[in-house]
Every structure is written in structure tokens, then in C-alpha cells.
Length: 45
Image 1 (cartoon, one colour):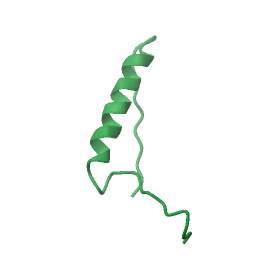
Image 2 (cartoon, helix red, strand yellow):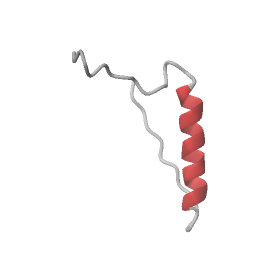
Image 3 (cartoon, helix red, strand yellow):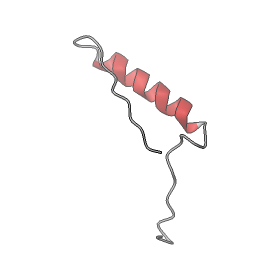
Image 4 (cartoon, helix red, strand yellow):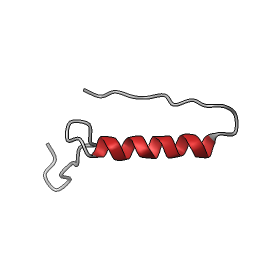
């Protein structure tokens, strides 16, 4: 099931928020149920 996050922080904290987002993506990539699907473009569904 798709889901999303909204990450907010104080003004001028863009770099900090991007580091948080990257860390979340790395953690989710380790879990097969949360990882982005890899589509086989050679054999479309």
C-alpha cells in the first residue's frame, strides 16, 4: 500500500530536512515491503 510522509522544520533548515529524508529512504530500502519496486521495462505488464 502506498503511503507518504510530510517532513517539516524551521525556516532555512532545508539541508537538515534533506538529510532526514535520505536517511528514511535508506532505512525503507532495507525492508522489502517498503522498498521502491524495480520494474522490468523489457517485459511490461
